[in-house]
Each structure stands twice: as C-alpha cells, then as structure tokens.
Amino acid sequence: MGDQAPSDRTVRNWYHEFDRNNFSVEDAARSGRPRTAINEETIDAVKSIIEDDPHSTYEEMEHTLGIGSSAVNSIIHEYLKLHKICTRWVPHQLTDGQKQFRIQFCRDSLERFEGGQSRHVFDIITGDESWFYHYDPTTKEQSKVWVSQTDPRPTKVHRYKSSGKRMVAIFFMKSGLIKSIPFERDETTGLRGLILHDATARTINESLADNRVEPYRNPPYSPDLRPCGFFLFAKLKNQLRGIRFDDEHAMLNALEQAIGSLTKDDFKNCFDDWLIRMHKCIDADEQYFEKLH
Image (tube, rainbow, N blue to C red; front, side, top):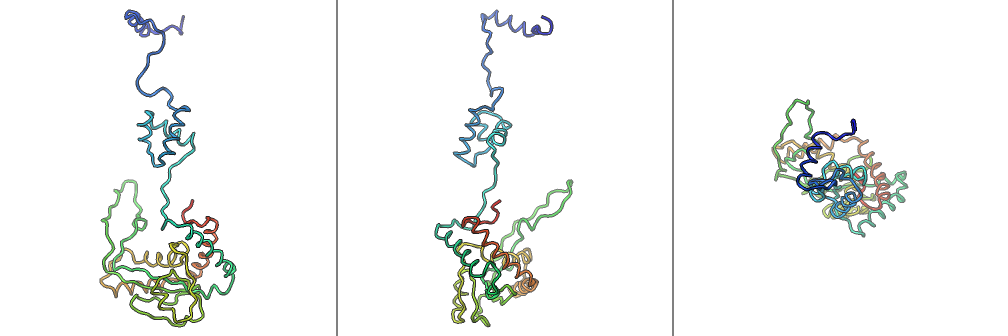
C-alpha cells in the first residue's frame, strides 16, 4: 500500500478495539467543541444573543455556545460585520416637544439672521450663569503626559471640587465681552433695544426685565446650542482647573484674567460656530449632534 498504509500505531489501536469486540468503523464521539465552530447555527446563535443583549461579552457568548474566542470574534466581525462602541452620553433624554423646539429654534434663527449674514447678529447678547470654584480639579484629558515605553505609568490622587465657590453671570456679543457679574450684583447698563439670547436663567431675566431687552429663549437642555455652554464656560474653566485659590478674591481675579485673555476673534468665531451648529441640529433630526460619528 506504500505511503497510504496506516501506521503501526493505528494498526495496534484497531487490534485492541477488535479484541474488545468493537468492530465499528465510525469515529467515536469526542468531548469538546467540533473541529469547526463557525457554521450557520452558531452564527445565528451569536446574532440572537447580541440582539437580546447588545452588552453581551465575548466570555458570555463563549460560555453559552461552547465555542472559542477566535470563533466568536470571526462571527462578530467577519460574518455579522459588527463592532462594539461606547454609548454616547447626552445631556438629557429629550421629549418630543423639546426636540421640536430645538429644530424650530434653529430654523427661525437661521431665517431671522439670514444664516449669519444679517447685521442683527451683532445685536445679540448671550449670557448665562455658572459656578466657579476655589479649586476645580483637572480633567482626565488635561492630566495626560508624554512618557517613554520604559517609564512607569504616572498616578494622580483623585481630588474633588472645593466647597468654596461663586456664581458668576457673563454676557457677551459677537463683537466681544459685555460684562461679567458675580451673583450678588444686579447691574445692567447699555442694553436697551438689543436682543438677549439667554439660557432662561431666572436671575438674569429678572435683572434685565426693565431694560426693554427682547428675550430670545434658548431650547431647554441644549448646551450644544448655547454659546456659554459650548464655548465660554468650558474655555474659562479649563484655564482655572488645577489651581487652588486661597480665597474667593483670588479666584475672581484669575477668572477676570481668563476672560481678558479671550480675543475678538474668539467671540466672532463663537457666533459663527453657533449658526453652523443650528444647521447640524437640523441635519441630526433634532437630536444632540455632537460626537455623532
């Protein structure tokens, strides 16, 4: 039989089986997973598991189906064409009414201000209030440092915001800053005949009620459409994070310096971005549009 002859070991195994009166020529059942774990049945099973629970892990699927990680990986990526992503966090679960308000606000604003070409854009005063802390820890992104492959990973003690804080309201226009006002003060000057775009902060509305300023209400729960939300406060607070101020006076002085560092182009670009964001909101079908891709 030449090269096709069975090996001596195989012949001995046959002899022992025949000697035990086992004359079957079929392969005996084996424990463990089959030679190929990727078939129509396992592909449908993986698909069903994921549809039932999109958070399912590799380990759970391996345990349930009795197949290996490489098979699960191939089924998910090569056959089902899936990939796992993190959930996109949003500021609020918008109601249908809030979604409609968002898109109507954007359409009305783009029409009223001619897509940003109208000179009346320079009449808009936007403002809001926010807490500023004596100590506000740096974000995880701000804490990144460059290291070599041999350097140990840096550590950082988790810190919390200080209890000392001050509410500050800030107003600005496309042409630049109008006023920053610590919460206790109630000052409004030179605002007659202008349009106030405002995040419905009660204290700001009350302080401007007698100045014939037309309120221009921002959609609720929409920091992506609020200039103070997507531009001003984030920019200012990032400059103050990680600095531990001795008292409120020192914090407010640093805040004024941070405000003073903003250029006219910063404010102009903010309003240009605001109008671009309106288009994005409409294109996103009223949903939050940031980090969609």
